Image (cartoon, rainbow, N blue to C red; front, side):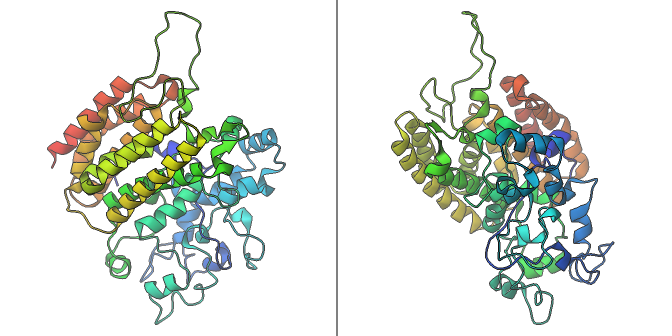
Length: 445
């Protein structure tokens, strides 16, 4: 995979974040997977799977080990300060923290070897193992039979996105929603991009055996479905009163942070620092909804599901407009946005794509049809992540050489530089760098 910028890795996989899994069955703990005949070898020399997955998960010098470090973050000065400011007591015992910084297992679901201190363990993503642990490796077990016994089919884009979103966006399970109060106390901003997260946390090889058992993973599909699922999750949680509101205020987690967190000046000649966004008919003076995933999904829909694109765009516009009408109208519009995003997710997950699709998606993201929507830090960050992710996919698939990708890296890094800090966000410089990067990639087609 082509080199990822430090900023991108820092933004997406700060150790404070982690993924969690389903809540059915019993969680047997990381130690149940750690034997040398299972996944605890020092070298990846297994006949079917690597069998050194635990080593990769624990790697202290790599982002691949971020999940294993998630619990330890709670004991850091930052974690302790956040918990103290919120009145949570010891962060390592607070449900509001443990839902994402450890494997989410309730009382009665914890096997003898389960330990919350293991952080985000195997079962956070693969699901509670009580139904399949003793049989998943034995003849005549198959991947299909393991899934039937409770293994999460992470090779499927929608299933994987659902698992990752639980913590890398939020869910209605205990301790899996980052509130505005948490961010005010110091919790990092939450951002999500499925294909990149998958690449950084990959503990397996996409070899012939994997393809025989689980099929071929399509990076374009994974990225696109991840965007659709993120919009669905956002709309669904916003529509729930317990998440959409905090007292008399809306839950500001859902909105664009930087629309409010700007410098305030009494200078009558001060220029405004925002731009009008044509895809977001939000009434002047109202904080805009964070639509970074909506922008990306609008772009990809034109390529991968054109029959659904207009419906989705109309639903998103109506949702933004409803923010000035009242909570009931906004909830009704959120439900329609959820439905439109779900239709896109289902269509994109149900088909494959030609080899040149990534080129087309990159060109569309940077194209004039949506370039004017890159008016905000969050949406712009999401777009450069998308182009970087899809370029890496082209390298992995042999469509672009590593050397050619390295030649394009300067323009991508310039786009990253323009969004390195929200305080210095430069939309014009960003759009120029993104356009040049996309043109360079298109030239390799």
